[in-house]
Image (tube, rainbow, N blue to C red; front, side, top):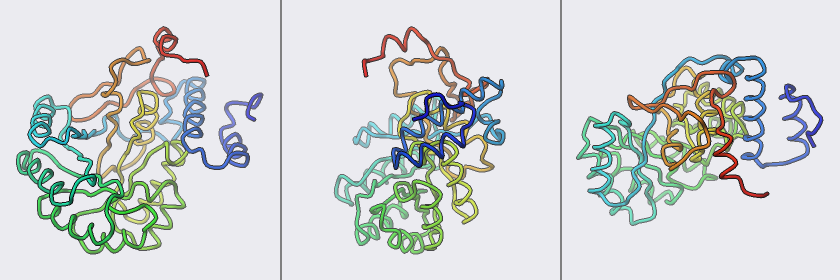
Length: 297
């Protein structure tokens, strides 16, 4: 439906695509990313410049501890701290009994102390009553942020929980775009908001959500759907334009790869990652690697 259209008419192309294809946020994000990259390369400027200009050239990146074994997670966190790779850590919880999850998280926080921030992602696993008990215990353990403790559609419950506890709550699945952000803000939510270009149909949609969240006084967090280097670079260009990312980012997707399709990997150091410089996304595809990993459609 877009063949033959001028690739620099990004607003026109997105409007046409939105009229003819509902949803499909991830596909739209990939398309918008490609259009922004092409426009930046044509003009000789970074994507961040097209989005208003970067305010940061190095962004903090946390690491997810996911082994499920307390001792192993502590050792991994210690190594990441010693290597100056990450100084904030997230744990996915909710699959086990609340008391078991709390013991696991509390032990890790106690071992790391003030050297690292510890936060959790409950992935919508609790109902509100369970969340009251779990959040209270996690707050006492020193957890600094609790992500999406209850189902995404329960905005009223999320508001009640945010009002009840000191520890901030992070809305993720509850907010995909600016409209969701407005709905949550109008309901009285007082926590933080996770931004993801893939759930907001592109970098510009994520930044629109960021503007709503900022106006409502919500802290911002640069989230990921574990994109590779291309998607991560696009996210970094968007996040770099924001004045403040109160809760940093989790743009560690490329660190999970055994190989990559770019000629130069992103530079992770000093507890964060550098914004890639150069026209467009600032990255170059390795055509040989791309051909090697390509599969027929």
